[in-house]
Image (tube, rainbow, N blue to C red; front, side, top):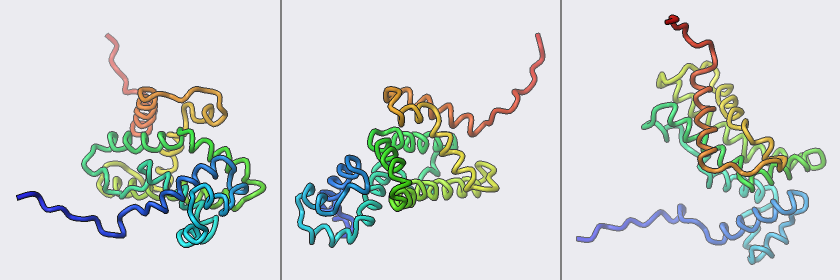
Length: 216
């Protein structure tokens, strides 16, 4: 007998119109920034009616948050704390670190960071929304991961929030600053893997003095 096919629940299926709108908004926010983007322009670029747009996203703020959240989800940064229970800690951290690096080193994320930084003093609302939709939620996911790892005895973390923010800060080392300033080429896959592996090893093992060895 052929295997039974189970249809996905209706509310779990992607909404083509929503995806169409988010693709257009991503393009426009990157091109014009928060202040320069209008709902009319998004509707026009997405080729949807204003009614269709406003039904799904009642305001530009809602659309901005959804656009950033969609990119984070696409990059795998919306994960459950137990998602990596089947991996040793260091391997799980390498996988998570690589996801984070792939996001923040991407051309789109760098352009968004540049845009938000440039607008922050003039349009603090844009910076606030960006932080809430992106970094704040990513930090929360990593805090939950480290809380679970500590509860399972995989590491000592009296302050999981501090540990999570320090881990993410480590992932923002290497060429990240130069990339944001347009001063270096995009690292290839091997370079990314090597950077993440070294950063994770330092994070896990620390940089205390090596054990003394007897001289020959």
